[in-house]
Image (tube, rainbow, N blue to C red; front, side):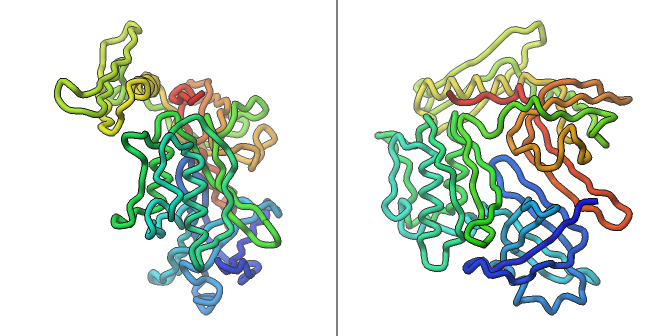
Length: 362
């Protein structure tokens, strides 16, 4: 049975506060283009640890599995509920949703014209951590992309009088057509736990031929394959900037022997015809998929040991049960891990999407 250890650290200094915190009902995980999450229950007899070792908004929590650092983030809530004392934390990216641009344009780093969104994300973190008492020690990958943010006619800017949320600036960069993807991880640097923002372009992750998930081998349970045509379409009409007859439009369509179904993609800020066409194509590709695997519960197994996969990886999934007959490539868009507790074994849940739903920049 794997051994888990939970530690807390002072958010600014990295000082170790609790070397081996006793927690139950633990669950934690990571996601694509989103912050990770963590929840647990503290024994009421340990409530005296508050606020010195579990001070919300000022304390980091880390998770180790057999000595390997798997997760880190910031405790945001610790409040008794009846006989229990639940704790909630979120990954490093959650910090930016509690911070604002109070100088405008990230204190002179913007406005941005034809800028690499990867650089804008790095600038956001640099700005946040350059302010007094704002340095979490988070690093951002040096990844570059060919996507662009802002145009000469309409630069991407963040005005101080609107006090924009820094986390929403990062969200804007990932929503750019052909833009980067991100997730987070936790490393140890100079003796302290520190966050790292992993940037990927044209994608995060790779196609993995060295690991797989198969019924009867390392898949414990599955959510049945979903066949839902509510979102299906072979024709996507993308509507961009402008009004009336002057509005930009791109139509991407194929014929595949099925009843014609259409979807309208409304992107009123898009002024470039080529980018609008690319968005229509990406949307049409995603909406053509029927037969979706959304979630599987797996076990630690040599076919895919815990920690061997990364957010964004494509993995081969083969499911065979009374409801499902599926064999294909799926992309890992999130994972949640529940450590063993009492008679309950370790549970690992992967959130998946069909790999052919995705198209990437080039």
